[in-house]
Structures are given as structure tokens and as C-alpha cells.
Image (cartoon, rainbow, N blue to C red):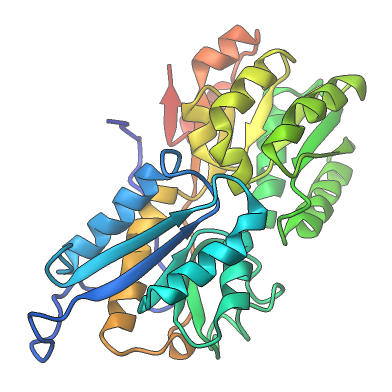
Length: 329
């Protein structure tokens, strides 16, 4: 069990949400169907899936009694998402849970009527998932993160750890709808710190090896791996590849750091998915996604792996260690 220095709270624009059980008017025999569409594999998303189901359980939804789950996984194959989304629709699910912009886009193409709850999705207005955060207006709602803003802060933290690194490589996935926003944010943050931003693309697991070779070839001095479900799914393999570069690497999600990465700054995915259950709960009880404001995560974790820092010959500044929510030793 991971112990953090500060508990993570996810608060949003709609205030505190109180757990409650399904209304008395609901038949005990009624079983609602919740769809789960993941770009990653079953194994790599096991923790967040368990966190979401725990959130549902806490709200009175008992698997096999009043709710059942239909989960489908793309195993990092973006091309299979449309077929998987259609499969969930054929299974007549009442609501679909998605965890990123790529799966949100695929589900949006598949249905304009079945409610969709997005979790940890960046730029939902710019991606035309919702009309506005306050009034989504369609069949999509959920929780958003300001990943482009977090990316700027992540670059600043990496600069504190490796101030001599001037050439920063950014690993980007062109199949992610947010990649132009991420790259623009990276360039802006690097310009403010007088750093050189280097663009490196890997849009599928098979491209990671070539991407690492490009990072080395471009004489990169540090790396930022943006928050992306393909990279999260491949985090174990990515650690092996990155370790060979002997470069400091910052990540968009803490799971990479738990797997051996140097540092991350992000919202806690487990907590975010657990909180997403409140949206599903409301929708299953009759609320319309169009009327449920999109919440913004506003608590973020700085996670540092001291073991990795030592292996790279880096000394983490004491003020940064004191700011960290979790230090892995």
C-alpha cells in the first residue's frame, strides 16, 4: 500500500457530493449496465477500474445485484476503439465511462444519446466534447484536468532537478486529440525558461524504440513524457527503454514513477476515477449529462523517486522534497 504525505481531494464546481443509495423507487430486480471503454490493457488499468467500482459500491451499487459492468480494452490499439465502442452500444449499456480524450472521441462518434462520463480528460471544450464546463449541453460530462497547465509546472520542476539540462525532448502521441495543445504548452514553458524544446513522436508501442533513439540522436539532456494512455499502458517497457538513455525523465502520471520513473506532477488517477462514480450514480438515477457541470480537478501530486534520482547521480533539492506528496525510496 502506498502512503502519501497529503491526502488527495478532488473538489469541483458542484460542491460536496454525499453518497447515497439507489432510490426506493428503483426495483430491486433492476440491474443497470455500466460500460467501460479503455484504450489500455486490462492489467494496466486494473487499479483505476477497481477504484471506480469501489466508488460505485460506496454509493450503493452492488455488482450482480443492481449493477453490472461491461468492460472492453483496446490494448493500446487506437484503431480498434470504434468497434469496441459499438460493441458496448450493442450490449445496451446505460452509461459509458471513458478515461481520456482518445476514447471520448471514439465514443462520441458511436453515440449521441447514451450518456458518457469522461474521466481525467483534457480540453473538453476545445475538443468539442461539451459546449461549456458549466453547461455540457450534450450526452457527455465528467471530470477534466488542465494537463497543458500541469505540463508547464512539470517542466519547471524538472528544471529545478536538472538545471543544467537545456535541451528537453517531449514524447508526444499524434493520435491523441490533445497533442497540438501539449506541444504548444511545452514550447511556451521552455521558452519562458530559455530551454530548447525537441519534438519526438511515438503514436504506438512499436514506435517507442525509434523514439528513444531519436531522443539520444538529438542530444537531449532531459525528457518529458506527456500524459497519454498509450504511454501509461507501456510504462514498464518505457522504463526499460528510458533507463538506457541515463537521462532525467519527468512524467505526466504518477504510475510511471511507481514503475521506476524519476518524477511526476498530476492529479491522482485512482481518486479521480473513484470520484467519477458520483456522475454515473446521478445519471443512473435520472440526471441528464447535459445538466451535470464538468468538474475540474484542483488537487495535484508531486511524486519523486529517490532511488531513480540516485541511480542518475541527481540530488533532489531539499525544498522540492518538502513539497513532494510522495517520495519513493
